[in-house]
Image (tube, rainbow over all chains, first blue to last red):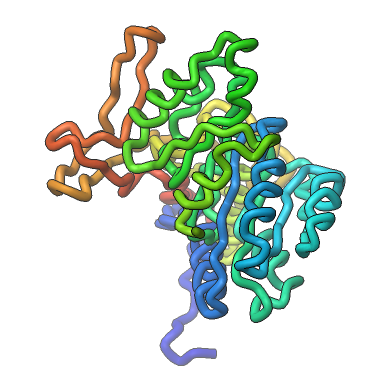
Length: 228
Length: 125
């Protein structure tokens, strides 16, 4: 027992009293995120958080970046999904390590899950970690993970209003990727308008149109992240 | 979106505090939710009602929610205040931006991300 700690003062029977708590429930996640960040720094590992809706091309983008960077960096991927390890299996075909994180019912990764996943890797043997968040354009913005950079991926198939409808996640982004530009015409979606929306909401972020399946634009994403 | 899990954490934190004080009952919980969180107060209230009914310490307690405005600071000119809202006629909707209203630089969110249990009212045993 710390001698500085006095006994808890207890109320008399039937007495009503207030307890000032000032406890921020979201603060614990931010604290663990900071711990992750300093752990990664200790090992000189750069972590990139990739966020965006389901089916937008997050995994395909990560695969494209791995192809470009495999010779330069030792890479691992943390792959968040509610269930299944389908995407993690896709990733390991590129000869890099993958840690699947199943969140169960939770709509986002949190810093504690990432901390647990990092314990499964030998950080001294790595330079770069991609963290693929659960497919969702809302919740991941609330939960920093401790990554150095955050990428938000959207695609033209989500329609013309994705960015203005979800402004807050784009405010968290360092790089905003507009994917599937090869389908823009078929979808009747104007890529330049999406780009203008992104730049208006977050003038600091770099916006990159891509076709991740063909690889178009992926090198520009990598450069925008400062990895090339 | 994640109101259920957030409210579970709120309930746990309140229970822990009430037990630490050896309280008979929790009468009231005051919560402050920041503008830049993704928490819908009505859904938090709904889950609080459901979850508090399961705990004898919390049963019948009231939840008061205060929505707190967030603030931003310009990295260029030092402007501090509300976030800028752009009324976009193309969409007929209001879109927030990190553009500084004073100098056109980029602002950073400095507050409004909290979900804070401010105080709880307890009945002594």
